[in-house]
Length: 426
Length: 165
Image (cartoon, rainbow over all chains, first blue to last red):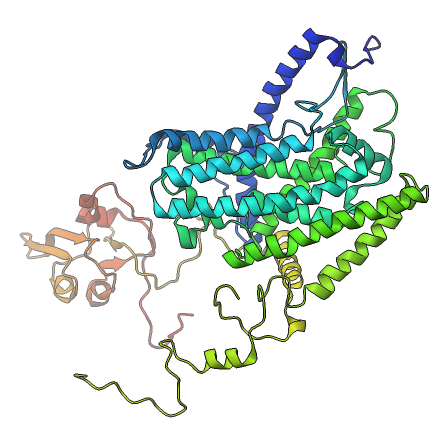
């Protein structure tokens, strides 16, 4: 393979077009299979956490369960509500599905691959707007859910859709703001630049731990996963926005949820865990690209994204759902101020470091890590005590507490003595 | 407070979402890596039945393969669910035998009185429960079916050995 060109494949338009088409088709297949396996993984992890076996009848160890589920969904009757808006009702799952698929496009998931026609970047599209594209597409995803809720003409669906739009808009802000320190550090919005910066200057999970945490929480809320799954809170809203959906349309929402999860995991791996960078070696990001490098970095990226996928499931089967006011309070009163303050802090620190002439490297990472550790201690040791979430907003005054405790449910004061029986015929 | 949610008054130092979350995650992870699985993988594994398990009936036979039943009529009399249908017959030697002996397993409440009352130890409730059928008619067991059953039968309760050991 000595005749491989080391020029970018974009110099050769025909080869670039063909390579892009192949990438899209291959990626789509792999992505959908991964999503199918994720549904199985979710059930298996939930089973293991709850001391059960999980699905183990279809295929070895239940491996064919996703195929069986898919077949079942294809053969089920498709119902659509008579008084609903049929066009939007059909369009909604398509929107949810497409946005979930598209948002992965900018993530580079391995080192560039050398081909006889030039060096090919291993991401679907090397967009110059990078991360901003993902933000834009993922906020389009809310239309799918909201329209599904609206077009079903069902109060539970509508409530689910409303909750979802409120939640996604609230957390979109925290998510967008938490990413700004990453962009400040990389000095660029393209994913390749962010990966490169982390390979040189240490992973952002150490550089920007607070941003990582904010992003992690927002990403959970953005993908409607527990503890933020209020749009489909089955104990309150039947099934939320997809109450009226059946058959493959329901399946589309399900696939979209897992696809979003996959994208968010890939995003977190890229932005904070160094993307496809293999830790403790600079072999993978220096020198000429090779096929071996591409494969090994692909494995590295897969492990990182897999860790986040596992984290998603682990947290889902551990935590209970938030109350609605807790959700809003966490988003607006904690995450938003925290990420805003953090931008100012990181920008000032970077400015000071620049003035002192400290460039990318161990010293910069060390300084940033110490600052992050201090902020984390402040947040989790001082602010967490009774303020973060647990009593949500404010503590009740002692007098109010006493009043509530000494009242029965109808509001009349309870006396220590036995209450008189209500007289008949009053 | 925007909405009047009743909040329990706890000491501030005990209230921490993050600590509770972390301990919860540790707990679930412990179960993930060290599961205490209690599920019986049913068709492959089955759990042992008690010796006094009362399931579908079985009619015991004599050495020449005929039912031990002498059509005395005690079991349809004692049956609280009225599920045994018995039409007695008599051969030329004056020996009684059942012309029709049917048990409707749907009506049966598996009390085991028929086994207790039987003077010939002919009818028994069995240690058996896999008795699914494709039609309701299949649950009316006739004499041929009852004698053809091979599963072990229930052991009677012994007052001298109440625990069954």
